[in-house]
Amino acid sequence: MIIPAILCGGSGTRLWPLSRKSYPKQFLPLVSDESLFQSTLRRFAAEGFAAPLVLTGDEFRFIATDQAAATGLMDARVVIEPSPRDTAAAVLTAALLCEDTPDAQILIAPSDHVITDVPAFLDAVAKGAKAARGGTLVTFGIPPTRPETGYGYLELSEAGGEGARPLESFREKPDLTTAETFLASGRHLWNAGLFLATVSDLIAAFELHAPDLIAPCRAAITGGSDDLGFFRLDPAPWNEARAISFDYAVMEKAQDVAAVPMECGWNDLGSWDALCDPGKDVTTHGAVTVIDSTDSYLRSEEANIHMVGVGLEGIVAVATRDAVLIASKDRLQDVKKAVDALRKKGVKQADEYPRYHRPWGWYETLCLDTRFQVKRIMVKPGGILSLQSHVHRSEHWIVVAGTAEVTIGEEVKLVSENQSVYIPLGTKHRMANPGKVPMYLIEVQTGSYFGEDDIERYEDIYNRS
Image (cartoon, rainbow, N blue to C red; front, side, top):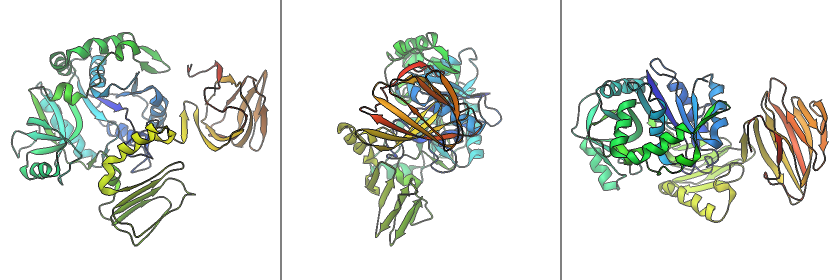
């Protein structure tokens, strides 16, 4: 059995403003009704794969489990990384967690890639597994179709051949002239960021090429603990591990490395133009009208924000509720720079998503002023907010769909659709959804301060501080 280790972090900058640090692209339904993470889970539900390991951050743990539950694939083990340390520490931790099965193979896979031809992908993995059984570290590459400067490359020792082929070197993202040379050589593949090896070979490679990572990662596991079905790594030793990619730490130094060419409809969605339909002059999504435009991508995420493009050429325009991106297609690699500029200015849209996901559901702000705030809140079936109080605000709750179980002080009652309650400042209160469908309510806060830190929790089933 092959154990998929799914890397589920990310900074959420390349597809800004839709993808953000608080809600990166793997959780978004960019190319289908399912998120990229959900499609990744389905890909590994095939015969020959064991239950996956999902390595993710604390802020994404409930999103990951909710999306897994929506697919019916709930056998994944979710491991919480206390802080981002790049990919090397995550890969080593996955291997150490499987140390009791040294001959098992681990497939390291990103959670945010598109693969449209799953049978071809599984066939490539099978070819890689054959090489990995012989002690080889295996990576996977995509035969290039254009002189792409946004990808790293894998240089094969020779052109032609089938299955896993000896790898000469890893090559950094090239300039256009070098990329054209790579394309013509027949010996270069785009680096797909997928790796396969046995548990014992992977650990041995770290012991040889990145031994300083062994102690902090092993200690993070030893000091880790189970928490609401997750495995939480110990923060202190984990944070001592240096942040470095698996490519740099191990793969570029290893000797017995092979690459499997993989033609499977792969796309890492590294920029907005990766979502352009090659069969259309202009690609649109959502509420969009286009007139006399060419070579452009227009997307509106809000039904009540209708985007109109007139006379556009080589433009990407993306509108969300709280931010709009307009960029030339030849400058999309600079979207990261734009996000950095927003962060320096303290603009919350740089990282924060307009909808805030919580273990019980989500909320979004509809209106915010100096003396009031209006929120829309969704509580999923069985969801329970913490028993809490506020120092600076009182609240009105109006249920607009479903039924809420409301606690105000010592009173507990059911509040149905079109009914409302008032929670005075300083009063202990809680809401829950006892029903089988999502419950929606409008919350009107009045007071002098509306920050999320104005919460004193007394009981919380999700163990939040």
